[in-house]
Each structure stands twice: as C-alpha cells, then as structure tokens.
Image (cartoon, rainbow, N blue to C red; front, top):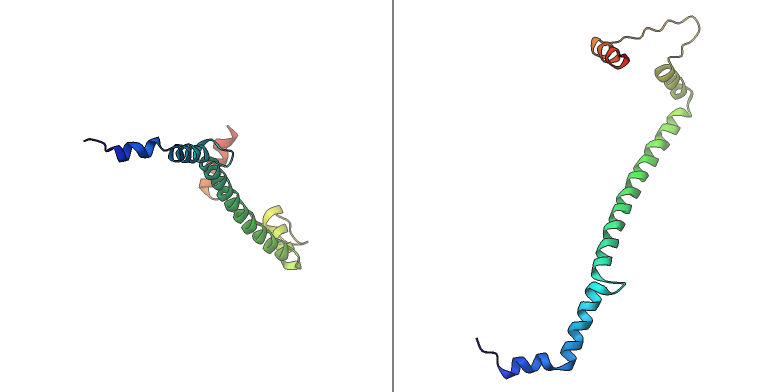
Length: 108
C-alpha cells in the first residue's frame, strides 16, 4: 500500500505533531493525567462504600441505644448477656452437646 503525499504531509504538519504530543502528555504524564483520575475515582468509590457502611452501623447503634433507654431493654440486656437475675429467681443455662464439645476442644 502506497502512502499518498497528502497523508505524509499531514504528519509533517507542525500543528498535528504538537497536538499529538500534547494529547499524549495530558493522558499519561501530566499531574492531572487520566491514570491519576482513574486512581482517584477508585479511591473515592471505596470511601463512599465505607461511608455507607458506617451510616448503616450508626443507624443500628441508634436502635440499640433506643432499646437500652427503656427499663425492659436494659433488663433484657442484663439477663441475656450478663446472666443477672432478680432476687428469689433461678436461672438455668442450657448448653447443647455441640457447644460442650467445642468448648472442650478449645480448652486443650
């Protein structure tokens, strides 16, 4: 395939050479290059996901605080987590065989 003089003369044009050089510089080497923008966009997406996660956790914690602000909620937490009881009351902790075996495995 022969190149016409018309095609060759385009590449000899100073403006085309400068434009191509400028485009390559802006895409790859400049401080605001495409690669840096891509990296920053990825980091921004990760931070947005993290923000959404923490917003959900805040909502969950607010519900927990609201539940503990009532007398019933506080009593429920004390009974379930700390095995507290009222006076003249008996508490029986039921353990299943699976949990007993696992506990013995961890003790050894």
